[in-house]
Length: 412
Image (cartoon, rainbow, N blue to C red):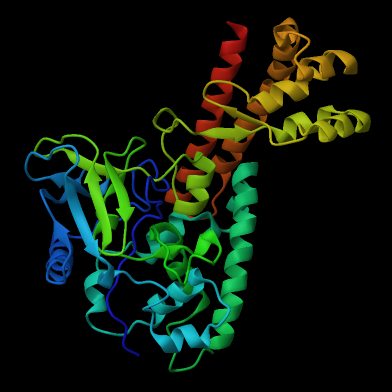
């Protein structure tokens, strides 16, 4: 089967993308400059334009994109023609026909597995390895470590696993494990599926815009060399001609250019991309409190919260516990009539703030104790790789920092 060479990039909406981690890359994989130069030679010969930018090894961050000259705000620094995008529309027809009814995600991943052209090696040389992907993505982790994920990450992983299982059931039935499709193993498909999950750009066509938003995706060359930053310095957009990246500010020669993948918690980043940003580098990080708040309520209180739309979904971020959390905890501190009066705007919520803070403090202290126990469990575990355990431990440490900071704010 002949499949043209196309590439993935971090999943992104036209105005802003998704997210990244402590190394600011979906996986800490550092291809050689020779491989990168081969990719650029191939891409530029087919219409990809890099204007004032180029790849460079960055300590701890793999390959990044830096300015090779002074770049002005508003300049287009990268353009990728539509002809070089791998989409549902130009995936080889035998694959699409065999996978009728499958998600675009599954179709693109199957295509990666079935690629057999030597030209594909140019791209394969710059992709993260199977080992890198398996170490970072919780869906690939041993069950012992999956069981130690934070609750929010665990819930996300369960949904992700269900999506993968559905996709693999269709793909494995369409392409039996024989000599013709020997490369399409479950592990191989999971590897490709993770690449598509973390490295596609948001894109629609008249054919795909009616599909679920999760299937508004294409693969494209070179753009996945951009690292993530919480405040990305380039915007991403597409039209009929192709994708473009535009500098959002001026860059001096040698400055790194980045893209911002979106407002996501570190639990989301961990499950979808295989890493997490340092807590102070991710303004959207948060941790769930449902496991500690929900058990506090009697059945009648739960019904009251449900009726008012305030049951569950309780989170703590770097600034405060969310309004839902504070509203729910207030029900433990005042009469139902007073609680209702706050919702109706006839009672000042600040009257109850000290009591609500006291309830929240008890919640957070229990959470902190459990977080410390989880860190110890991860440190005792021998499952998975050192890198995987280190990633999981780091996530729990981030949560501990969120919780401890919130405790300090209440006590001050």
